[in-house]
Amino acid sequence: MLRFGLFGTGHWATVAHGAALATHPGARLAGVWGRDPAKAEALARRHDVPAFADVDALIDAVDAVAVALPPDVQAEIAVRAARAGRHLLLDKPLALTVADADAVVAAAREAGVASIVFFTRRFLPPIAGFLAATAATGGWHGAQASMLASIYQPGNPYEGSGWRRSHGGLWDVGPHVLSMLVPVLGPVRQVAAMNAPRQTTHLLLAHDGGAASTVSLTLDSPPAATFSDVVFHGEQGRAAVPQGRWDPTEALGLALDQLLEQVHTGSRDHECDVRFGRDVVAVLAAAETAMAQGRTVTL
Image (tube, rainbow, N blue to C red; front, side):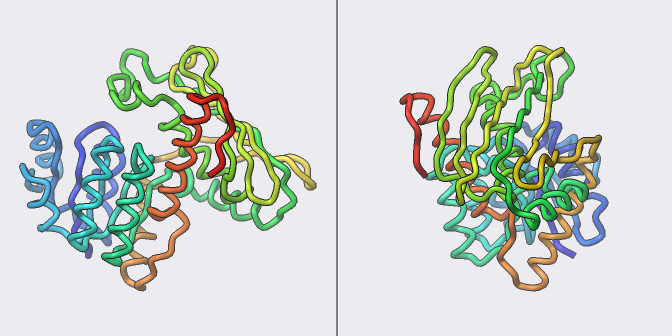
């Protein structure tokens, strides 16, 4: 059984990471660290584990880390954990800069640790199965994707998230979209981008092999205009990513299954490992450059 340290005490750490770690048969939640000691104590008490006041003390006490923190904080902790030989269960986006993402990749590679970045939808069986079948079919010319969310409403668990307010839908829901587009259309090679009202970002992406996709993203949509859809088009017609309600604890449990399999088999090759997480960060950073400079950016 792998001992995990949980880094983070917010909503996602509670309903996804903490809940899944506490119930997974192959994992044992061994401690909690948070930037707010009172919240860390409360979450630790809920799971009857100790709260740690020091990052490295918790890293030393476990075999793996699960991180549910802002991306810039996550990247630093991930590097420290990997250098200590701890396996990594991280959240998206991996980091807020390509340099920080590269540092995580380098640390994981040099230490030989297993890693998964939790792109939630990639671990939902209906979506994972759809993407695998759609990629196998081939002949896709492109896709249209929209994730228009409205999180800055009273009572929303993310309304006070500072990094989301600063970086918007591009960095928060953009990784979800990319995690579904890339397996079918291939890596992104060129990015054009434009801003629109309510912190909306519109992307035009060129993929390997000639396919192109368009993406619209925001966290500040008018509530009546929220919308989420990813549709591929090509020689076989149209194919839409399945919709429906999903359980974050179930999805994270499947991510834990796959991380544990890496640990037990010695494999360090996963489709959502830190290398893929780094490539997603590179696309997001390219989009910011494209918007700032009014040009198409080649990766």
